[in-house]
Length: 128
Image (cartoon, rainbow, N blue to C red; front, top):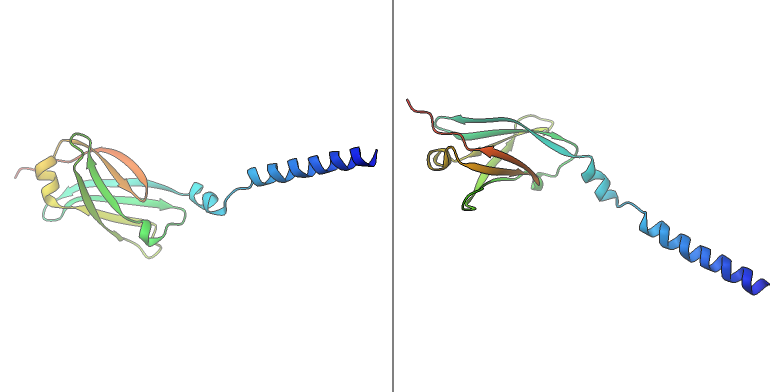
């Protein structure tokens, strides 16, 4: 009887340990789940290029605040130059080279910033 009771307790303990490990949440995943990015501006500014402004929600490292534009057709990729716009680092402004609008204006693309993606149409260079 004691052997059977010991075996049942041992099996329940092993099962409980396995389930506890499986349902444990990684603290890094919790932090990443509470983060989001919203694109608040996309505009061509003469002499500067295409400007994107992003509102950040949650915590991001400075290493994550990088962006790129990837064309849907052809897959060409252009880097964005990004800087924080306020002291709280919750607003970041990124700029693509002015030539990007001239060469790829009107084409579909995807902007990736801090791991978040935004489908866009690249603005055309305005005619004077």
